[in-house]
Length: 155
Image 1 (tube, one colour):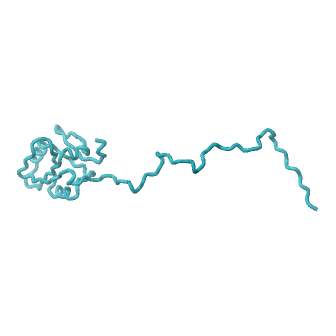
Image 2 (cartoon, one colour):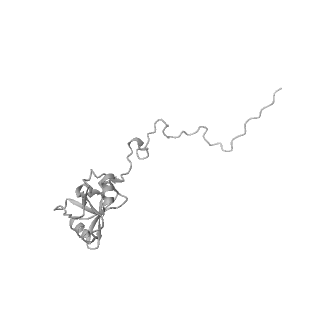
Image 3 (cartoon, rainbow, N blue to C red):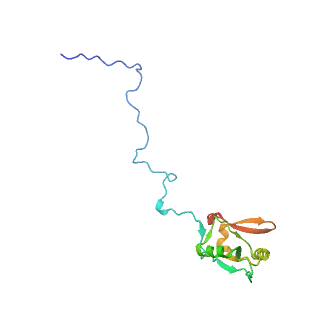
C-alpha cells in the first residue's frame, strides 16, 4: 500500500495574487549600448603628442657669433647650449623640457650677457607654427614663451 499524502498547507495570506507580475525590462537583444559608455576603438587611438618635429615648425640652429635676428615678429628664439640645440633639431622639440622662447630683442639681450667662450646656439622657430603650444610668462620686465604640451585647439 502506498503512503497517504496530506493536502498542502494553506497559505497564510489568502489575498495574494497567484501569478507573478512580469517586469517591463527590455530583453538582452533589444538593448543598445549607450554612446557614452561604449569602448573606444583601440585601432583609432592616437598616443599623446610628446614633441614637435623640427621640420613641422621650421626650426634652425643659428650661431651666436654675429647673430642678427630677422626683422618683424615672425620668429621666436631659444638661447641654448649649441650641442643641445642641434639635438633638438635632429629629434624635435620635447614638451617635457619646457623650452623658453624669446622675441628677437630679448634674445639679443640674453646673448649680450653670456660669456663669449660659452658655446651658445640659438634655436629659431617660426612663431605661427608653435603658437598653439606656447604659454606666455613674465621674466622680470620682459615676456617670454614656454613650450607646453596641450592640444592645439586649446590655444
